[in-house]
Image 1: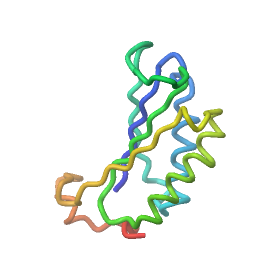
Image 2: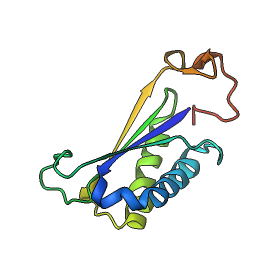
Image 3: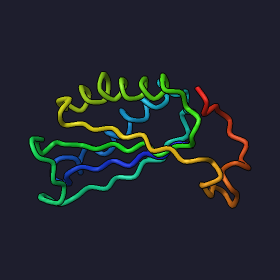
Image 4: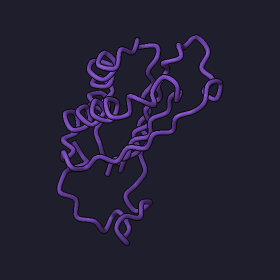
Length: 128
């Protein structure tokens, strides 16, 4: 399971949600083999001044990838590389204006479709 939270400034990113979502989804599908139809993105866009990030531009963007535990170090590095090699250039972001955080929690800590995450039969692997 993967959910993505995107934090940025509303005045910069409001009209670019679809582009952001498409770019991030391509990265997750490519790096982790997530199925195309498994896109869960939440935009947390803030008013000017509500996202404090010294030495960053107004375009500063934080991407949190919340997922089941189990992916290898190499898989995490591959996703981070895709974010900086593909997503950042697509969005016109400098490397200093993008931060990526992968937050993992065990499947039993998730509730999905009326069950605990460890009781689900996923159609994809999370241990790559």
